[in-house]
Amino acid sequence: MSDIIHLLPDSVANQIAAGEVIQRPASVLKELVENSIDAGATFIQIVIKDAGRTLIQVIDNGKGMSDTDARMAFERHATSKIKNADDLFSIRTMGFRGEALASIAAVAQVELRTRRSEDELGVLVEIAGTRVFKQEAVQCDPGTSFQVKNLFFNVPARRRFLKSDNVEKSHIFTEFYRIALVNSNVAFSLFDGDEEIFQLPASNNKVRIENIFGKNAKKRWQQQLLTIETSTNLVTIYGYVGKPEYAQKSGSQYFFVNGRYMRHPYFHKAVLLAYNQMIQTSESPNYFIYFEVDPQTIDINIHPTKTEIKFENEQAIWSILSATIKEALGKFNVVPSIDFDQEGAVDMPTGMSVENVRPPQTNFNPNYNPFGTTNYKRPVLDWEELYGDFEKKEVPIESSPSWQPNFDSPVMASVSSTGQQQTIENVDSHADNFQYKNRYIFTCIKSGLLMIDQHRAHTRILFDLYLSQMENSRGISQQVLFPEILELSNEDALFFEQIMPDLHLLGFEFEALKDSSYSVKGVSSHVGTSSVIDLLLEMIEKAKTTAYDASISLHESISLSLAESSSVKSGQRLTNEEMSDLIDRLFACANHNFTPDGKKIMSIFTQDELEKRF
Ligand code: ADP
Ligand code: MG
Image (cartoon, rainbow, N blue to C red; front, side, top):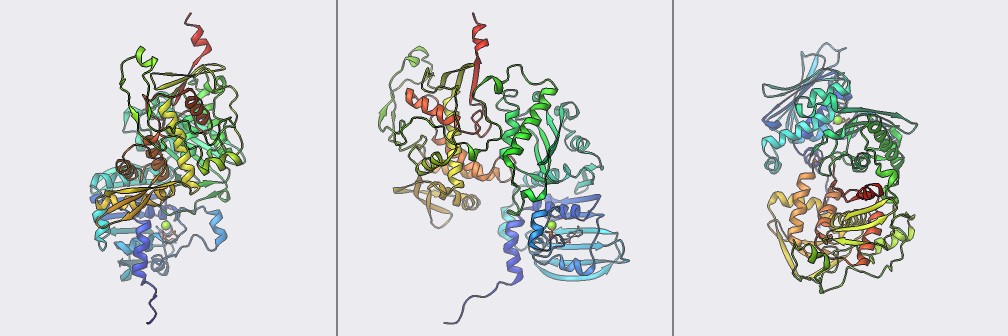
C-alpha cells in the first residue's frame, strides 16, 4: 500500500485554525481593533452591518503597512510583534501569534487598504478563503482599513451556529468595551449601519467609563466610583470601585492587566470579599481595576480566545488588591462598624490561595463517611414539630453513594496529607451545634453566634473539591448497568463536546451514538440521587451562557452545577457529627463566606447584638 500521510493545503489548515480564533463576528472585531491599537492608532472607526455578519470594518490612523507586509500579514504565523521565543516573556502588544489575519482571510472576504505615512501610494489587497484575488497600488489615507465581508461565507456550519442579531451584537459590544475601557487615550467611533452607537473622544479612564456606560443614569457613575490606587514593587493597581449602595444584580466588572482585558475569578473573589457584608448576596459591586506588572511575571501565552492570565505572584497580589479596596471603602466611610474580619475568628486568611488552603486537621476518621448511610429514614424532629411549616413526611433517602464530601477519595487524602494546615481556633465544631429548620446550622464562636446555610456551605465545599479534581485530573467513575441516553440538538452537542474532557476528569464516561446522542456509561461518584440527564442538560445550558461570561470559567460552571445538584439540601436533617464535619470542611475552603456564585453562606450574631436583647 502506498503512503497515506500528506500536508493539508494552507486554505484547509487556515480554516481549521480559524475555528479556534474566529468564532463569531465579535472575534473579528476584537482581532482587528487590537491590531489597530498595536499599530499605534489614536483614532479607530468601526462599522458593522447585520450584527457583523455581512460587514465588519475597522479603520485606523496607525502606522500602516508596506505593500510586501500587506500581503505577508495574511500568512499564518506572520507577525511583526515577536521574533524569538524569549520575546514571549515580555509581551507588550495585544497580538503576537500572527494567526488572526490568516484565520479571518480563511473564512471571509477581506479587503485591506493600507498606507504608511512615508509612502506616496497605499496598497489594496483582496483575499477570500485564503486566495488572493487582487493586490494593487491605491490612493488612500495613511493608516489601515480592513473590511471583512460575509463572515463564514464558505463554512455554512459555522454560519448556522451564529445566534440572533441581538446576541451577536451584544458580543460585539462586550469586546468593544473591553478594549475601549483600557485604551481611553484612543478615540473610537462605532456605527451599526448608519446609526452612531458610540463616539468616544480620547480621554482618561473615568471619563471613558462615563462615556460608555453613562447613558444608564441609574448607576450615576461619577458619584458612585471610588478611586483606588496603590503601587508596590510587584504590582501597580489603580482604577475605580463602586460604592456598595450602587451594587446591582449584575455589576459592570472589569479587570485589565498591562492594557489587556482579563478574567480572573480568583481576584474577583478578593474584590467580593472586600465588600463582605456591605452588599446583598444577590448583588455585586461595579469595578474597573487596572493592574500593571512586569510582563515577565504573567503568562498570556494561553489559548487565543481565552482571557485568563496567569500571575506569578498571584497570592501576594490578591492580598494587595483586597487591602487596597478595603482601604478605599474605609476611607469613604462606607465600612460598617462591625468588621467581620476583625471580629470573627473565621475570616479568610488574606493571601491564601485556594490551592494552599487544605482541610483543617480534625480528628475525623478519613474512612468514616457520616453521610453515606444508605436507606436511612429521616426521623421526625423536634424542630419540625415546633416549626411545622414544611414537609414532615418520612422520606427514605435513596441509597445515594455520595451527595456528600467524599472523604475517602484519593484526592482529598493526598491533599490533606501534603497540604499545609489551616487551623480554625475559634470555631469549635464539636460543641454547641444545632440545626434550625433543617436548614441552618448554628454554632458558637468566640465573638458570638454563627449561622450557616447548610446547602450553600456544602455547595462551596463540593465546588472546591470538584474544581481541584478537574485541575488535578482525578475523579472516580461509577459504571452504570443500564446507560441512559442523552439526546441533544446539534448546537448543544457542540457545547457538550467542549465540556466533555472536563466531565471525563470528574468521572463521567460517554459513548457517542449517532445523531448527537450519547450513552452515559459512567457517572461521577459525586452525583447523588438527581437525574444524571437533567444534570448534564443543566451543565450544557450553563456552558452555553458562560462562553462569554466574565466572572466564571467553564470548569467553574461545571463544578458549580454538579456541586449544587449534589450538595445537602435545605430540609435535610443532619446529625451532630455531620454538622461538625460540614463546619470543619467549610472553614477549610479559602472562601467560606460566599458560594461560588456569590451567595452568602454565613452570618454572625455578635455578642453585643445578642446581649442588647436583654
Ligand atoms: P499578530 O497581531 O499576532 O501579529 P495578525 O495576524 O493579527 O497577527 O497580524 C499580522 C501582522 O499584520 C501584524 O503583526 C502587523 O504587523 C500587521 N498588521 C495587522 N493589522 C495592522 C494594522 N491595523 N496596522 C498595521 N499593521 C497591521
Ligand atoms: Mg493581531
